[in-house]
Image 1: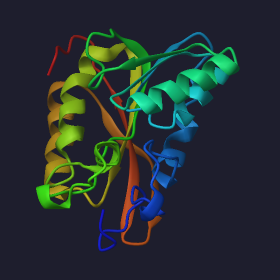
Image 2: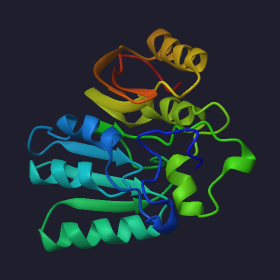
Image 3: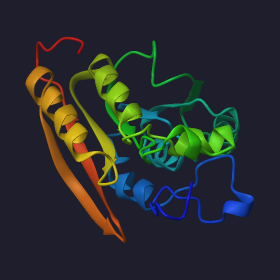
Amino acid sequence: MGAERPSAKTPSAPARRPRVYLPREDTFLLLPYANPPSGSRLLEVGAGSGLLSMTAARAGARVVATDRNPAALRALRARALAESLDVEVVRTDLARGLGRFDRVLANPPYLPTRPEQRDPDPWVNLALDGGPDGTAFLDRLMRALPDHLAPGAEAFVLVSSLQAAGRLRAIAARWRTGVGSLSSVASRALEGERLEVWRLTRSAGSGPH
């Protein structure tokens, strides 16, 4: 991505970028929420480096980590096996067919990206490209989340001020109106960007949205 759009998601070394998204400020802002009760089921959507999944598994959670990047999943599986951690890796879009969980974590790609701005490396682009207004993946994720939240469950999702503010408000309003509660539980100001973590719950009786 171009230097004119600095972000927590911007690769730090464009000449030799990794094929797997490495932890940055956005990942670290979500890290405190990778601490569910031991024995609970946790889903990480778009696991990338797997830092959140590994942290949750070390705390005793039964973890399912999804990604579309096979290199990311292979590396995460190897690390989990090396530590004998309960991490199942699944190559899928979002979390299709994986059932319900006690906690869901997601750091979606959010950089506003026009077609001509897409990274030539498809795996790098996958981790960064949020569509023209930065909310394309977030919108799909929020529509799918109700199907993956068990009773009393919660989700923690990373959003950025680089995304279209009007679309963020509309997505948040849709959740509050049709699904459950949404609140901001953490934020961090960076140069030219503000990161935020949304906490989402599903109300009893709310259906797929």
